[in-house]
Image (cartoon, rainbow, N blue to C red):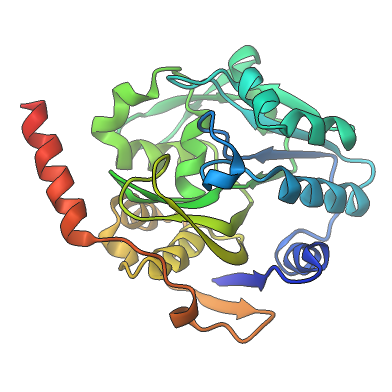
Length: 288
């Protein structure tokens, strides 16, 4: 599957336009849903949360391409996060108002049960709005993760998992990520790798690194597999990527289509595998 890679340069809007034209649908749309990454009360400069500037460009392009479409930005309450509050704190609400779009805290919306052949669940509640959505875009940040090694396209849907205290399910995190994507599979991922997060302490306390990239694909497994390579990781060594591929949610094989001369060596992200396994051993010992 194609993974489209663009370098944010002097004209980010044109680079975003190229990505959408290359990876997005060409048919008329009525309802578009976007899931950003609003996971913590930390500004975009930390590389932890969605960059309002890039969301602004995305909404502007979508409104231009699909002027009659209703665009809804979705987020959910989490263990330590109220979605309404965090949207205001991060300045996301102002961007949404500017483009006359809608913000929905799905915790206050309607839900419906979906039967899935999941790894942990056989039924999941999903926001009802997704059933009427013509285009579901997941808009994650590229970050390391202390438990899953990588958090990107696939893990972003876990934010829509209905229970507020999601940390209670971290013992089955890889399986839950797969189940969320079986129930709420996006049509397109657009990854904000402009300011990425590297190191072993993501998704909140890792180190920001300027990559200057935007990444898009209709195959989330392929997109995340590409991102794993940026960390020097084999995609199949990441539990939720391998399990998602096994569940036919996508392929770990991909073809890079870039609008510049892309070279992996120029976009390396730090991640220590020995430190990762040491942290996991210590964490397992503390849980006993």
